[in-house]
Length: 309
Image 1 (cartoon, one colour):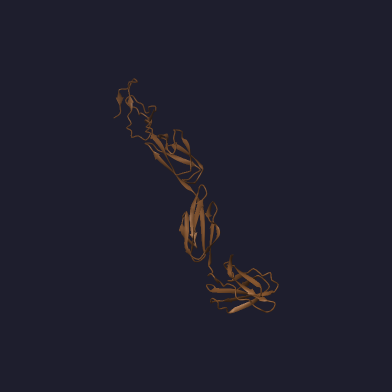
Image 2: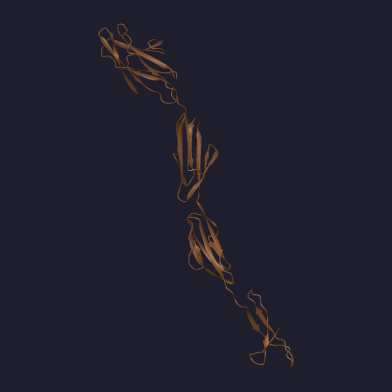
């Protein structure tokens, strides 16, 4: 609302009329209109007021007697057009005062309103959210934020993915748009490396190599028959066969196995087919993975003294 006072006065006999006009700027989406207001005279001779209007200064193509009131709304105005207004007072004797000061009003062009509808899935936010109303040519930025232990999965604008971006801006908006953000749990990789001269296996509980953020994973080392477990390094430490890691980041663990060299195991059996000149010697050999040459020794005492070739 803008109240404008006028410096000139009009008279009917001894009546002095000071005219004030009150402009009302219409809201977007309403028909263009302007409201006029003036201070009424206390002289009883004034019977009504007349409002004059036109699109050229001092040339009024329309007028209306509004009665004994002090406000009037002119409707159905054309956007972008300048209108000129003046008021007169009508006495009960039929006489009409001269024009009041002239005031003008240019009807503003209506502004197109565009709506950006912003939404976010669970485990994150987009700001601002909901329906964001913008005038023609405006710009608007949005910020996407995942919750703890989550990450942005995708941002879709008007049905098209723009990637896992943390912000997005609309510039020179002339139409309505949509923006949607989705989120996914953070995942971390558990890598287990086996090292050393020996061999063995490493199992995990829960099983797997990719984990959402937060779980405690227990690793267990089991050496093969000819190896021993030496210890953990990197993401774990110690020589116990099990360790635990918390998956709040990518974790790499090294398990070291050392080979154990075991000698062959020999068992001598009883001689068979014994004669005065010969006998068959019997026995078993477990080489424990080694390359072996089998030799029998014999003699009349534990010093033996004889051996097979």
